[in-house]
Image 1 (cartoon, rainbow, N blue to C red):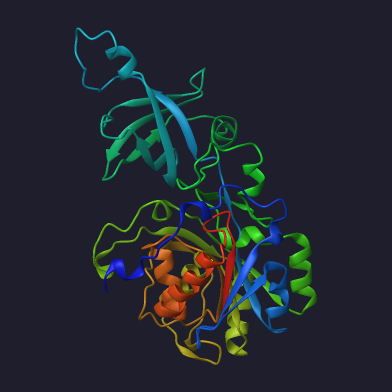
Image 2: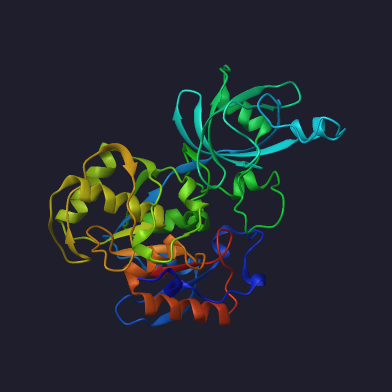
Length: 372
């Protein structure tokens, strides 16, 4: 299967640069995964599309200000020229660091720019008073580095002061103070993501109240969005792509709700591709299989934490998810492949063509699609 099979034309002006004033004012394309028929709706219609016995599963991961700017200490950098007066400025120039995943106490995976000039052993200083210091202890491809930060009493507290909201690269503006609230779901609790689970950005307390009034049960899980969100698919063949794993947690209460819904053959509605990946990975790890009327084959979920490294593309057999709320995704991305696996590539690409013609807003701050 070719990555190019998941390409589509997207005019740049359709990439949403700003959130709407009202979260729930987004447009929503309603897509049938069996017939491919679609209908233009509004997100405020979403609760009415749910079945009274549905289980809605959301990702409560919270985005932290993971983009920080520092400067080189110049300990291991190669001199530009001993006679070049600009060499000192180069050695101590600005460095942009995007923390993507915590590995342990003080150790993080990160994307570093400009990464090519920063080798292992280099030290990066952050803040006017060097509130944070990090040593580069490992090097990967495409600007990836492993950093070890010096101990501070409240690491995340310092990030709140120094860090910036890690807006995606297709948002061509600097982050602002209001992004700290808007690039965050209203139910975000568990801090650890470097990108928002964007399908959840449309929900308001009022919408969630309408969902509950309809008799729909809500369950929360956590998947911290990491490097895979930022890395493009560089392989030409889909099956050759290697996806990054991401940390997840499913509580005992959530596992019980999911297993009860599966046992009672009720539909499970995933809010976002992050919820899909977590649910489908967790059921595969359990090793148990049973039938479910909403999605064919299913299984059971075991509570706990782990690393979800599942790559879902057409041909995948869904065992848990029976319906999906999702934003519109990048061409040739793993997220578009996941949606295509759920609803069929031709159905999805035709729906995307319609969305482009009707000038839907795309990507993180854009509109959404409900697939059932």
